[in-house]
Image 1 (spheres, helix red, strand yellow):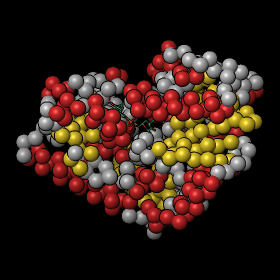
Image 2 (cartoon, rainbow, N blue to C red; image 1 turned 30 degrees about the vertical axis):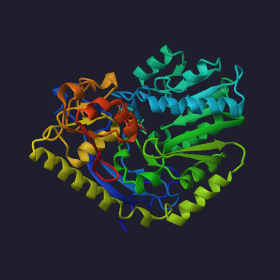
Image 3 (tube, rainbow, N blue to C red; image 1 turned 45 degrees about the vertical axis):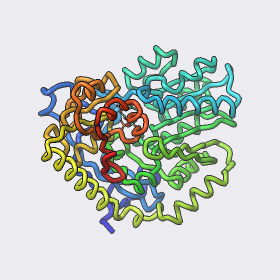
Image 4 (cartoon, protein in one colour; image 1 turned 180 degrees about the vertical axis):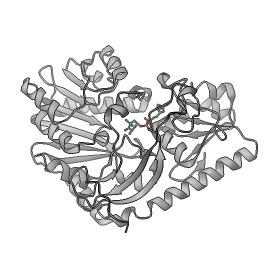
Length: 411
Ligand code: JHZ
């Protein structure tokens, strides 16, 4: 058992956090560099992950100011995955049906990004409010007809909206709760803003999938926390909310849970089963995490060996996905331009930039057919099926894909 850290838990305040993984110091995962001139001054920060024995919340110890992460330099736009758009449209339509949403309702999305989700309601005449501090994404959302408040969500903003007479029938928080250092302020904000009978849905990668499938690359400074049902249940109850239902999407971001939270207690059998199973398998105990670092090191060793071996045999290698997780992967494993010539990405805002830390250039996916690398390392492995379908021509011409997790594998 490691020594406790002095940092308090972001949820329960426990000061006995136990570190179980150190990824060294890494640059900020989404801080793609605009040019060679920026290489020299690139900051790096420690990236250590710990378990809280008080409430089971897994979290990193470092805290970078949110403006640095999500306002300056943030090029993540949600609309570049067809699968993600489909998943979210289905979610929007199910909320309309389940809650009977109409022109008198209000749907609020926290971290509404480019309007990828809320635009589904706009088309149906249902009022929406997006909340997102990232300027380029908020501009894109407004162009899609989604009114967007350019702020961070928390207790204070929720109180202000409520004082203006606004309450939400649905609040949606997709892949944002992990991004929030003040978790309690965030949860209190849900409670203030949600209408009686309203529903908050929260999606985030599931910590059990992360640990079991060794998805260590989803750890980066934007993700302060990695959630279990146990940790979410404890957090929301502290603020007068209840975890009433849970859904699992095995193929979304390596395994995502959607938590249904509301002001009235109505806990489903599914939630009880998740809570019981988490206790049984030990998600609530340090020992569950104890050998994770060893398994992560094994992936590093195997992937390095595979890439070096391919290079020794004269192969050319590119990568797919200038994703935040890709940044953790290349920095931790030590993948630079000696191994990978370029990274392709569909997000046009990332073209012409360089991956943080390892400085691999990011270009349009057309480069795969123009340059014909022998192998493509799938940094965005979470979209493996979608990307491989898209790149069928590259594959038919003999190109091969390397999937790095749960174990490096050529497919
Ligand atoms: P992607 C994201 O992390 C964003 P990232 C965020 N940090 C979060 O919390 C997690 O998800 C859960 C591109 N792409 O989404 C788009 C193609 O080029 O896995 C992206 O740049 N072609 C908020 O950044 C990247 O790959 C495609 O066909 O780790 C994927 O990034 C598809 C599908 C994607 O995650």
